[in-house]
Amino acid sequence: AQSVTQLGSHVSVSEGALVLLRCNYSSSVPPYLFWYVQYPNQGLQLLLKYTTGATLVKGINGFEAEFKKSETSFHLTKPSAHMSDAAEYFCAVSRGGSNYKLTFGKGTLLTVNP
Amino acid sequence: NAGVTQTPKFQVLKTGQSMTLQCAQDMNHEYMSWYRQDPGMGLRLIHYSVGAGITDQGEVPNGYNVSRSTTEDFPLRLLSAAPSQTSVYFCASSTGTGGLANEKLFFGSGTQLSVL
Image (cartoon, rainbow over all chains, first blue to last red; front, top):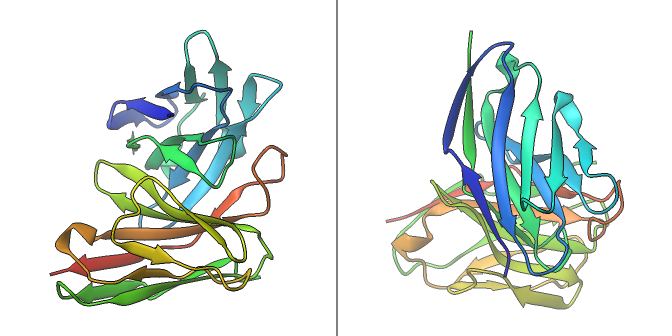
């Protein structure tokens, strides 16, 4: 069975600072890994995903994540935070290599301070 | 395209009542899923479908039924609502399994359900 651990339920950064949201996973098979963002009162939107190939994945809105198999990690980063990045972020791993059967982490709420 | 449409947006039920949460997509996606979101718990998979007539259980299926008679619709039924089913419910659909770059899961805007 897969599982996902997001370290830190709440992360606060200043505008212009580095954003680092941590995600570790466990999976018995090569996983598909995802980061989703949820703005208040909305559904989830895909930021980026890793399936195979290049381990550094670039997504929308300037976010990127690096798949590190040896560390079972898939941390999300953005060099410079913007006020519009304030949202909840979810890391997810596929169940059986299928993006319609996801196991989600508990989420990290990102606050951006002016 | 409307994408994934969920109705109603809000619903209040009494314990023991039944209801159906509607989900429809107009993208001709084969794969559809239902998730529930609870504070501090992330999203958990309830049921999913890989095509019309084919459904299967996810992580937390108890108390919920689904059917998939058409590609477009994937309703979620609560037969006898319980307070533990108070949650926000999201429906999602995908064109594929996610292995290709253009395959991704599209989420609806959610149904907020309260069971008193």
